[in-house]
Image 1 (spheres, helix red, strand yellow):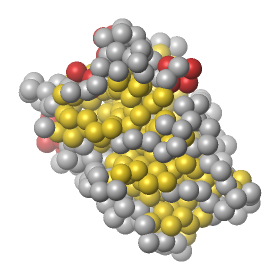
Image 2 (tube, one colour; image 1 turned 45 degrees about the horizontal axis):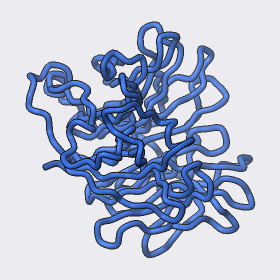
Image 3 (cartoon, one colour; image 1 turned 120 degrees about the vertical axis):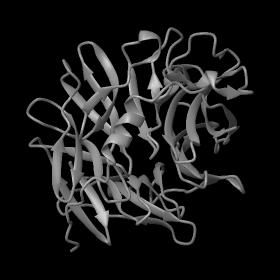
Length: 354
């Protein structure tokens, strides 16, 4: 079994803190959008993008039924990854630089984490002893995979699955892993679910924003910076955590009480979704510009598309986002993440910098 060694977080403290929290205002980046299409049934969700601009997610009916994991790249478009044996559902959540994909599929033995490569297809990653389910949410370039097995956060590394434990509660799940093998996720505690940062065998409770009762982490970059959301009676707020500053609120669009941060790249750019006067909107947050509605930054976005959530960003600044597509949709009119459940399909878009 691999021995995990504690790795110190490589933070050039002053440079990163100043860059993240005290930069001067700069002109906003603009993007072009590519519709990645969909598999049969026409609706899709996207979860990750790598440095090559390859994206993964799930596609099926607008209601989520008959969903299959997909892999997309510019040459060849969207590819159906199928399911594990005897399954009818799958979704892909992570992809690394070499194009290895991880996700979850049902089987006749329950839900199982999988890894996929173009040469080897789908492979069942198994689960912890005594557990009957597993899920994989992220993979780094070394092939370390973060997810959950049974009710505990898990890390697959060098062919072995490791139980990461909990923060004292009865469940946890790992949502992200960086190049150093450091993991971020959420765990039950005596006070409610809390975001955690795991490194070298030690799970650190990240706490919550002031006044809140629960939190969850969605991503960690190679500098050990964690993003996620904190929740309390006042709403849900996106956060950025560093060892030096702790947990800081990123705000929301137009004073909304809802925002969630889903991903952060190594430059400190953050993407997610936020409430607004017109409903749920995808956002980009930077230290120089704060939180901006991505709908306002995309050139030539079709008038019937509203970007409601951004779920990943690579180090080049490419973003993958979900949009509601409907004849009734208009970014100047109200639209929410619930709209696709009842009325319209969702499509996935790759946003590339101009």
